[in-house]
Length: 383
Ligand SMILES: Cc1cc2nc3c(=O)[nH]c(=O)nc-3n(C[C@H](O)[C@H](O)[C@H](O)COP(=O)(O)OP(=O)(O)OC[C@H]3O[C@@H](n4cnc5c(N)ncnc54)[C@H](O)[C@@H]3O)c2cc1C
Image (cartoon, rainbow, N blue to C red; front, side, top):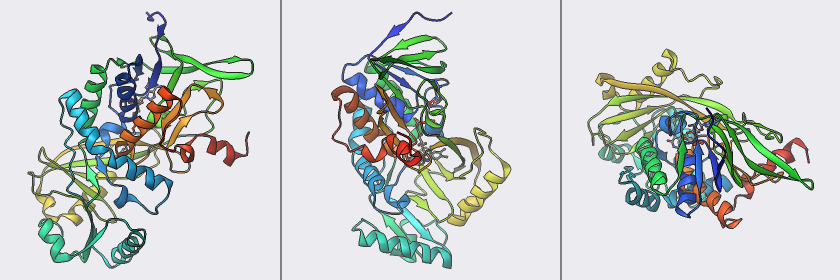
């Protein structure tokens, strides 16, 4: 049987890292908030991720998106500290930095190019010769040619992060409706102006003056009289955990083909694939084989270690690779926080701050204009 209608200040659709971070901030500000989550809280992409906080290792150019990731990373240490105080959970935020290895002649060219533009842009990147890189990480492939070090790129344990966010949001008074699907965004029209009134869910109606769509890869599937002008595409990433006593490897290590993320609990996460396979979350033999081959190329001794877990998750990808953040200009009170693709763990603190300020004060000092959904109307030529 459905619950009677529920009245809140804000409804958040999706209990991933983005929805939970926003809900936590709104709850802290004293708002009545419900998170509507179709499955387990934090059970999708936010569980599957590697937890790298790596604006520099991932950057191709210094643009608006890069600036957002750098500003987001700058918030992480305080975010992790505050989460620990609020939840009691240590999210294992670590600042050892990231290494990027050149293992072949082609890698040398690619990584030299990367190093040059990053130097010219004044970014914090160090070039290490092979012997220095091996001093830092003795288990990496001794055949390496050179490496880049990004001291400013950090990491967090994203599964612990989800546990912490869930607990902190509950402690801030946020109500969770897990295993409850949001089915439709409810919109009314008054004197030609459309505004959100709430969400129809499998458990009944939630009425709210603000509704945040933070449904990850499923964000453009919600029914609505004003359907979104964008499509979020799921991009599958498979992962493999390999046993490795800590602290045998300390840095996040990239090659041009894969990466390794060390966890303090004694394993390495090897990633990943980038596959357009729809909503198919299977782990495949080909996916695992390619990940393991690339992991062994980075650290040859992994060939003798035990594989302890494999999994896959869906990265939420918008057509232009950028996140979709902020108010829908067509429907008052409808707010998007989605499309974080490869960087949702990194961008959770800054997304939460910007979106919660938007809801509470009507504006944010964080410039969300480059990420507003209106850009798709411009591209399609629609009004
Ligand atoms: C393999 C892999 C590695 C990654 N590595 C990193 C990394 O190292 N660093 C980084 O920053 N990012 C990484 N990412 C990206 C990051 O995981 C995502 O960008 C981030 O988790 C997105 O968070 P989200 O809350 O938007 O989505 P999700 O975590 O997918 O949460 C969305 C939630 O919405 C719920 N939902 C959907 N539809 C409905 C509905 N109709 N009603 C109710 N609930 C609904 C879903 O059940 C889900 O729980 C990685 C992703 C993958 C897959």
